[in-house]
Each structure stands twice: as C-alpha cells, then as structure tokens.
Length: 298
Image 1 (cartoon, rainbow, N blue to C red):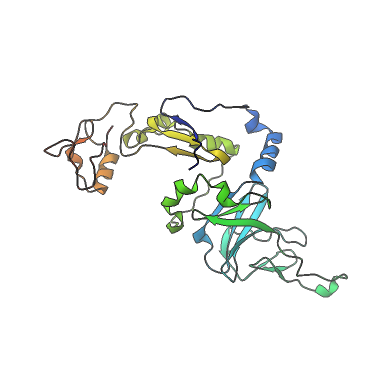
Image 2: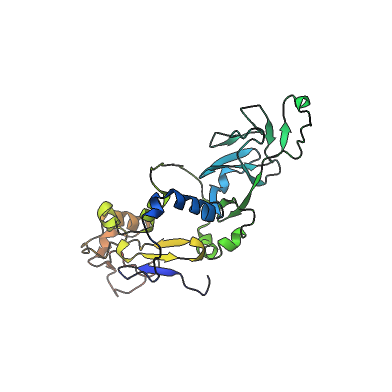
C-alpha cells in the first residue's frame, strides 16, 4: 500500500477529508451525466465479467456500459478479447444474448459474420461491392481488455493507464480473496430507475442499516465500521463481524445468528456468557483450540 494514507471515517468520528462541489445537480443534470461519461465512464477500467464466464474457445459475454455494448469473447487460441458489439456494415448490434457459445457471430441485418477473434470472415454477394470488400480491414473495433483479481476488465480509452497501475492500492488488499477460484452459483441483475450514484451512495454508508435492516444488529457492528477512500476512486468499508452492534445494549447470550457462527466454528454457544467472555472453567484469558479467545458479543 502507498505511504499516503487513505481518507477515512470510522464509527461516529468525523470524515477526515473535505466534500467539495456537492449539489443535487450531480443526480439530475443531463450535462453532469455527459461530463461523467466523458471524464470517467469512458476512461476508467471497469470489471466486466468473472474469468469463469469465458473459459473455452467460443464462449462470449455481452457487457453493457452506458450507451456502449461490449462483446467479450474467447478466441480459438483461448485468449479473451473485447470488441464493440456492432456490425461494421450498418451499425446493427451484433449480439443480443447476454452470454453463450458460438463458432462465429452473424449480423441479423445482412448476415455478415465475424470470428471470435473479431475478424470479418464472410459477407454474402461480395461481388456486388463495386470497390471490393477488404475483409482484412473490416473487423470489429477492439476494446482494451485485461485480467486482474479474477475478473476481465475493459476500458474504452485506448490511451488509459495500465490496469495494474489503476489497481495499485487494491491489489494487495483484494488479492488474498482469490476471486479467480470462486464458483458462480447465482447471477442476479436488478434495474432501478434512478441515477447510478444514488445506489452507490446507499451501499457506501451504513447510517441507514440500524433502522432499515435492524436484524444486522444481531451479528455485525455497523456503528464501528470503517470507510476508506483511496486514490483513483477506490473505496472500501470494513464492518466488524461476529459481534452485536455497539450502539445498542449487549444481550446476555449469543443471538440466533451469532449462535450459528459459533457452531460453524465448533464452539458451544452455551459457553458464552454476558459480554462475550467464553466460560473456560479456568483463566478467562486462556487459549482455545481455535486460537485466542474471541469477543463475540461486544
């Protein structure tokens, strides 16, 4: 991690940075949206798909980013590339399905076909083009695509900084999660009629959790959460788990959700009393078979 510390806010402390130029125009202005598109969305690295989505030659996934549609494919050599999802003849969207497997992509308008490497491999009645059809030059425009942290990332800006540079602070923080070894078991997309920042704001603060999601008080401490802002627009939120929320009174015994966590670790919930000290029958600070004693309630 860089020597420069991220801006942060923990618990009920004040934010260490300064908020500038905040106004409702950020959420409702069409001009502001265009500025965001030009300065951010079209120039940033965006995680498009998990590496498991395109593993075999012929696999493809369509990723929509604002007004653009991006086609990620695995070619015959097993390399994953990204292209603008538009036929180079009349601008028709080439692929409508979200994902699939194919030998080539056929335009529904005039049946032009492209290989999984983006090359034009067939166009009907080529003799009808008076100036010829230079198939070697009419291929799908490439979009920058690189892999990191178990995802394929795309960037619409051909001159953007390398992905590793963009993720420099995040790589040491996130790599130990080994996202590339995860198995996708469910894929859910939810469409909400609002500005994208309204959703991001919601998931970036825990101020609402106590009242909108009161069940969380039983197994995480949102009050003592830590929010950090890094260079490049990266953020993370730490939420202490395996304990009840410190803003509220501590229960005399583990909650139902803490009981499930204790049992998953091979611990007896009945051995936890009062403020979370484990009843070992001896030195209250002694070690357990699962490591040092854990405070599970507060």
